[in-house]
Image: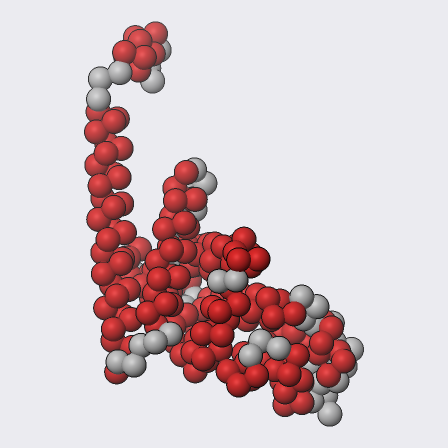
Length: 222
C-alpha cells in the first residue's frame, strides 16, 4: 500500500523525503544500510525496489538526505519572524539547539552516521555536509556577508557544531544540560573572537596610512 504522503506518481525526491526520517529511525538498529531502507519502505508502504533507487549512493546518500531533512526541519521550527526578534548570538544558539532537538530521538543513528563520516574516503564529503549545515544556520540567522566573513563564519560554526555533536551523542545529563553548557561556552569563545577581530579591524582603519592620506588629498570629497 502506497504512503498517503505521496502523490500517485511520485518522483524519487518525493519518495526520499517520505523515507528519510524512517530510514534514520531504522538506522539505529540496522545501520545506514539497505536493511534500514527496506524497513522504512515497509513502514511507509513503498515498493522496496523504488526505495532503493531513492538512495543510489548507499550509506552516505542516506546520511546526506537525513542531514538535508534536518536543515529543512530546523527552518520550519524557527521561521524568520521568530529569529528576527533575537540577537545574533541567541539566533545561533536557538538554531543549534533546534537541530539537537530534532536529532535527539535518533542519537544512535547519529552515532552510526558519525562512524561513516570519519572514514578517510568520506572526509571531503563530510566537510561539505558540515559546511552546508553551518551555511543553513547562518542563512536562517539572516547573515548576508559576501566577503571573507562569509567563509570564516561558516568555518567556525561548522567546527563548533561538529564539536557539539560529539558531546551530544554521549550526553546522559538531564535535558542534555552538559551539551547546552558546552555549546554556550563555545559560543562565548566565538563571540570573544569576533569582538577581538572587530577591534583589530578598527585599529587597522584608524592606523595612519600614507596611501589613504594621499587618496584623500587627491579626492577630498571621499
